[in-house]
Length: 70
Image 1 (tube, one colour):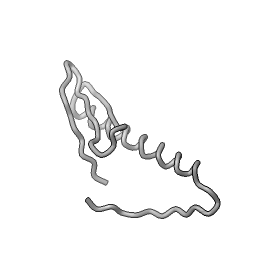
Image 2: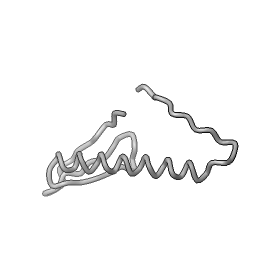
Image 3: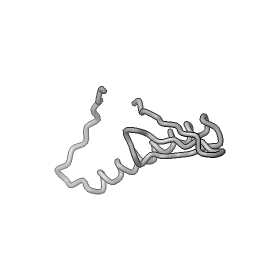
Image 4: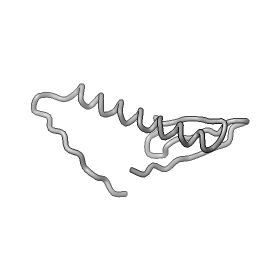
């Protein structure tokens, strides 16, 4: 999966967010630290979305992994 990471310097910090996942945001003292933290944030957002979908699932729900090309 490829995500578009946006980085912005804010004082002493680098702020980062994922263009495709507005809920995934992070910061770091360096751009690399902000990048690594953003990767963690993306994983957390996706895992929470998966967990929410599983909680909403009923007995006739089926799961399938698909690949989405951009």
